[in-house]
Amino acid sequence: MWLPGALAVAGLAAVVPWIALVRARRAHVRALGERGWLLERERESAAQAAVGEERARIARELHDIVSHNVSVMIVQTAAAREVLTARPETAHAALAEVEKAGRTTMTELRHLLGLLAPDAHGSDAELTPQPTLRGLGSLVDRVAFAGLPVEVRVSGEVRPLPSGIDVTAYRIVQEALTNALRHGAGGKAEVTIRYAERALRVEVLTTGPSVLTGSPGPPGGTAASSSGRSAEGAAGSSGPPAGTPGRSAGGAAGSSGPPARGPAGSSEPPAESADGAGRGLLGLRQRVAVYGGDLDARRRLGGGFRVRARIPVEGP
Image 1 (cartoon, rainbow, N blue to C red):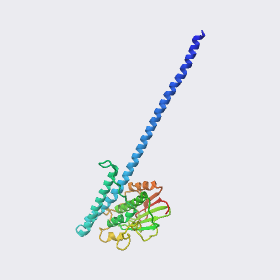
Image 2 (image 1 turned 120 degrees about the horizontal axis):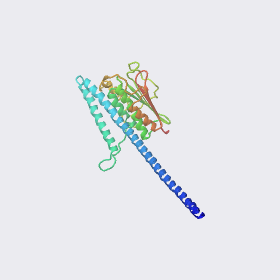
Image 3 (image 1 turned 90 degrees about the horizontal axis):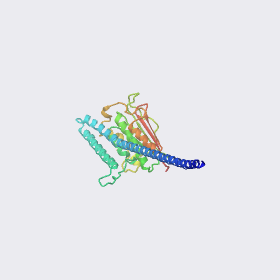
Image 4 (image 1 turned 180 degrees about the horizontal axis):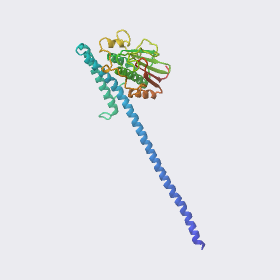
């Protein structure tokens, strides 16, 4: 009588571990599946984040390339229309600047598109130098000719900067001057580049119509002391500094250039909000944040805007 019971117990003892093993294998397979699903989700999230970052980078580059040159073209075209009959030589010079700005835009857009897609041979396009503080003098000349007098001050021990920081500093000045040119009628700008011991400080002060006073205000804020050199001259340019006799940024606008004015004479405040929110300034904040710096942009009480940035750099 005890033999069938013993066999049943023995069979049960063999079956239970087998069932446990099967369940363990199923749990393991299920865990592997869940882990694979989680890894796939992580890969998808990482890919989406990379795509988002790349889109943001492309948007910043497109904005930097198009915004400034198109703003110059708009201002110069409007100025040429006003003086076309009375001062045809001035209109001709303004239209020449429009053509130059258009060609520059096309060149930079082709360069950007070449970086985004390989050429017919499957190789990447040759990298051309990005604009840096060495080219600040040319930027100031273009803006001054378009009608916005600009004074540049450089202080501190001028030294080579990491390429990314150098480009970022240039873009800060470019964006601030472009906004002033686009929105400020009859104003002027002051650009201060200060090479501090462990930081590069960039400040752009602009005057123009104020939402509070409706009239231009005096250049305010605390500016670094001038070293008597323009940013272009400090970077090793052989040309005369901006702000010196014969090449004054303000004089360029007041001599043979078109009359100083904003787009279509508008005195409307900038499209950006009072705290500086806007695509261009947002892109600048992102650029500066990459290097651990900070950027502040806001309206000035007397009229115009102030853009101030601090970017950490290694000491000399």
